Amino acid sequence: MYPKTLKHPAMAPSYEKIAQMSALPLWEILGDVVGDEPVPMGTPHIWPYAAMRDVLLDAGQRISAAEAERRVLALKNPALERPGISQTLFAGLQLVLPGEVAPSHRHSAGALRFVLESTGGYSAVEGERCVMRRGDLITTPSWTWHDHENTGTGPLIWLDGLDVPMVNFFGARFGEELGQEQQPILRPDDASVSRWASGMRPHDQHHEQPWSPILSYPYERSRAALFAAAAGATPNPQHGFKMTYSNPMDGGHILPTIAAFLQHLPAGFESAAWRSSEATVFVAVEGEGTAQIGDSQISFGESDIFVAPNWSVIRLQARRDLVLFSFSDRAAQQRLGFWREDTALSD
Ligand code: GTQ
Image (cartoon, rainbow, N blue to C red; front, side, top):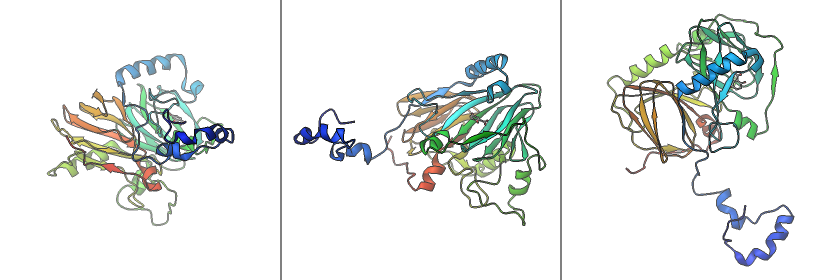
């Protein structure tokens, strides 16, 4: 806790007594409490999809979705102790095999799912089925019932993103099982899309929760919006063409804790450097490229997942036309009032 070289050695004789009282002299450690700028937590890292998929499918032969409750390979940041991909975010790859159901439960942690492989299936959230196709983004807000089913003939695999480390930081981890495999379905499939995602909202329905009433953002729509916005426009130097998945009630983020983005970098595009106080998880939906994150050089292709810790300098390059999905803790940081970015980095 104390620095190796004391800043105020003349005070040293009283430090043992202070420690015995379970107190700390702030004048020795002020920089650890209120520093000049963030220190990145965890390390940049990539999880190549092909290798992760092999291990996941092997697990699929050995443990059922019901036995596992959730058959997930958690992506653990190599430089962090706890099972998170960053200090603030949990990420995992989940597999449901044909005919299987991941049984219904709910928890205080909020989640999103980004579908990587599907021949048919859905995630049921709070009484409605959200159909899962590659590239679809589905949310599971805090304390909503959810179960997942594969109705296709091949593996159903998606990337989970949860705010678990934030919930645990606050000591607010609650959860319960429904006690039956699947929750009752109350509305048509993808009802939240038809009701809330067309620039209109139901006249007689209120939505006061701090998350988007849209539970599914189908890739077909998101991709079309992204490319329509990109057509004839000038790319942002840091981000290329980038869209934020938004809450139609207030234009804010999809979840109170987690923000999500879809961006397009045309082949050959090289971004300027930027950093922000948020940690971001990226997955390539289409194309391939490289990312320089801090001192790490990362090459990625379709479905590979990589993480940029908070305040690490990021540069992206598209080797082929790229579509990148990403999610971050920006939503929480903005709500709490301390999110910052820095685009004025030289070279
Ligand atoms: O699908 O409900 O990756 O509860 C971790 C915890 C997924 C889920 C995860 C979970 C889930």
